[in-house]
Length: 469
Image (cartoon, rainbow, N blue to C red; front, side):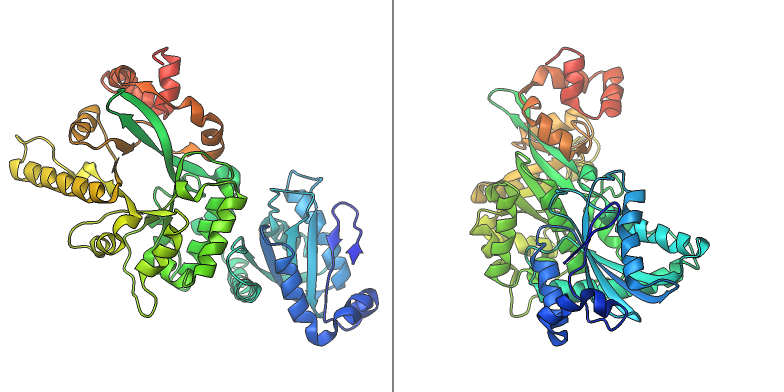
């Protein structure tokens, strides 16, 4: 049933309400029956809108206005805080005057539109008492994890999150604070960035962008591990990581090259315990026009526990679709080292952090020899798996050439590129190919050009400015 509004239509679907809304929505209630209202609300709100961001708002203590009056204000306030004034939303309602849920999704005619529901309702909550329109308390749960999980799982998570957010809001309205992690999750596709991987072709002596590690929070966090440390202990970390993973995939629509997504081993075990869940993830990749063989999951160094479900078995589900894995921080004594032994050929990339290495024998010969031995060990691991070694945090040209001399040809380092907006990467991927070694050597060997490269943050772009490319 559609309820026309002045600016943005709000689609009211079901409710278990008694009067005064019963007369307004009686046909809808009769169609489904009160006993089935929650089930129908859950299935239609979620299943009809798979692939869209879902918001579930819990409203309590509504005073001074009827539910229908309250609902009419939602799209009005969405229009106030979103510049896309012509965008539409749909609302699905369940409950009565004392407590009710409002499911909110972008309309079908607004692809890619992400309504700022938190901002809109915060503004509504603050202005309503001042304007004499009444008052209310609210909490919002949100998720884009609606491809892989079933409707019941998603609904339960949204309800839990909405209740928790209501509790948090009651505190927030008394105490003002900034939660950087919430800002991260609220970011839209335009904030997605990629840290490029640059490949050196030793035969042609050319540098080309191959792909990169994708982040959806822009520059809010320097690394994925830093983000995880900022998640409160009372949060479901598996659900948080699944949210991040789905947001990343959505942001990567039609992105070229090798795309790396971070995930912790425990989340893989807990979130993808069956082949069916992995199949849904693969379907999500295909919908975004991504080749699963160009997708790599980077396993974050984080303790994990195995019981009936083993990490190796879960990874095998992914590998059957061509999705491979990268090992990070895999010191011989770490749990990650056991991971690379268990996963075998499924590991297609080893991350190397040369920033802690000493490559000059005159400074520390023992450390120098240890590092050479470790690089040799990495090369043997990589060769056995037809994998690559990617050097991170390379800070100077000499270190890079040292690594190239020892068969390390992939670099994920700011000396080539800072994090690039994913939109820019997608549009300019073909322009960041075949940069001559002579251009790289010149830029990274002269002090003034080194500084310019730090400012520009893209060696391909700077080389073009200098007419070296």
